[in-house]
Every structure is written in C-alpha cells, then in structure tokens.
Image (cartoon, rainbow, N blue to C red; front, side, top):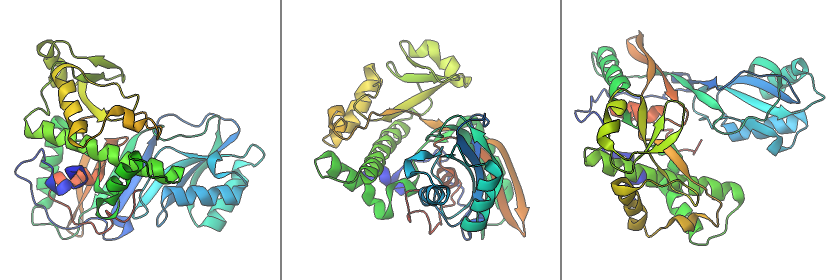
Length: 350
C-alpha cells in the first residue's frame, strides 16, 4: 500500500521548491502550541497547560496520573504531540480534591515541565477537542533565498490548499503500522491501545491513497456528483449538482471531504462513491471489516490551508510560522516546500 510512503504521493506544488535543509535538528527547532476549542470553565477536573520537550503525550499523561493520584483513563488531552518538539498542550486530570496551585507545584517540581496555567474544568479533554495548532519551525541548512521562496509558497498554499495527507509519523518505523493494522482486521489479536493505533494507521494510509488518486486525476479542486462536502460550520451534505456547488467551493465556503473508512462512515455516492469503494476493493477490504475492531470511521478534509503565515530569519535560517487545523501535519506542509530531512519522523506515532 503506497499511502504510508509520502515520497510516492503527488504534491500540490509540482515544481517542488527544494528548499533543502532540515527541521527538528533539535527539539527547539520545532515548536507547536495547541489552540483550545474553548476555555476552562470550572469543575471536577484539573486543567493544566504544560510546555515540555522530550516526552510524548501518552507518556506524560501516564506520569500525571501517577503523580496526582488518578487512573490513566482519568487523564484527558485533545491531541497527540511529538516528543521531538517543544510542545504547549493542555491536559485534564480528574482530581476534585486537589487545588490547582498545589497540583501545578508538584507537576513542575517532580515532572520537570513548565506549568503555564492551572485551573479547573468541567469536562475531560478528548481527542479532537482543539481548534488547531500553531507551529514555529526553524529550517537549518536551506538553500539561498529560502525565506522569500518559502513565504511565497506558503501564501500560495494558504490560497489553494495542499493535499491533507497524514504524515509519515502516523505509520511507524518503515510504515509497518499499516501492515499490522491489516493483520488485526484479518483476525490477529492485540491489546486495545495497539489495536486502535494500528487500525488508525491503516485508515490513514487508505485516506492518503484515496487523496493521491484524486490529485493524480486533477480532482483536488473539482466537485463530483455524490461528493460529501463540509460547510464552514462543520455540517456534511451530499453534492447533488456539482456545477451548482462549484462556486461555493471556489469561494472557500465548502470543502471536499474524503473517507476515513470504518463500519459507520458516511460514504459518498455517485461517481465520488465509486472512487471510494475502489480504494477499499483494491486492498481486499469492505466497510464491515472494521466492525469487529470498533472502528467507526469519519470524514476528513481533502485540503489543508495554513493560516497566519509568517516567515522570519534566525542566524540566516528561515523560521516559518503558521496555524493548521486540528489533525493536519506540519511535516506534510514542509514536504510541499521540499524540506523532508527529519530523522525523527518515523520514531513514533505521536
């Protein structure tokens, strides 16, 4: 399956800039700040905004649970973040009897992370409960003129969008998470966390395959009869007349969505639905295969558009800043610029 090999997938910028250089040479070169969907509102959960490097989200959540006397499933977070970065991220911990200031002091002293805010919240944070992420990335060793070139490219991608592929870190070392996900769908038993991780990698590779085929056929910006489009408010609707809806797509009022295959995924119809079904059939799969592993499926935007784009320099290196919607990968955007050298990419799913 080629979906886990980003090198085989088409780019929006056919004339890839080839900025060269490397990101994540050090964790400080890759900073990500989570943008919350809503503010903390008081309640039984501690709400801690933490800045750290050198730990992935799952490991830090486990450490928080042990330190603050909660079960691991009583710790919540909105997104999984890379250990090879400086990350600002919120966690909730169900600890109704622990004062926020006391918790903040213990976390800072014993876990060695910076506590930016401590308060209370009424709900456990769950995956997806965020508005997006702000990235600040330093590119070392890029070609001459890289700052101006990357600024122009990012502005173009902000207007036109880039293919919203899942990044390579989703697929594990050598992309083997996808093969393990296929084996689980075909009956191999695995612990729940491993099962969910590997099946989600398979779903991501299938989406990438669907998106690559759409790109190769010149359909990134073209509606098909039966497409499922999403409005700015997040609602899905069936495209019955592509010509009627095309101006709304061009104006950015709606967006094309693609399949995160699962037992309950809302499938496209018409010509768009035939394309989705072909992706599954090519890999010998059917929607019902996802039912035993409780993978329901969803829809994902076909394109990502960076916002609040800015480019500066530091000691001659370009420093890129932009905001991406939740679920989008900065490494996918960098790939459009020809920046692909990152030794940390395949070290972990997070």
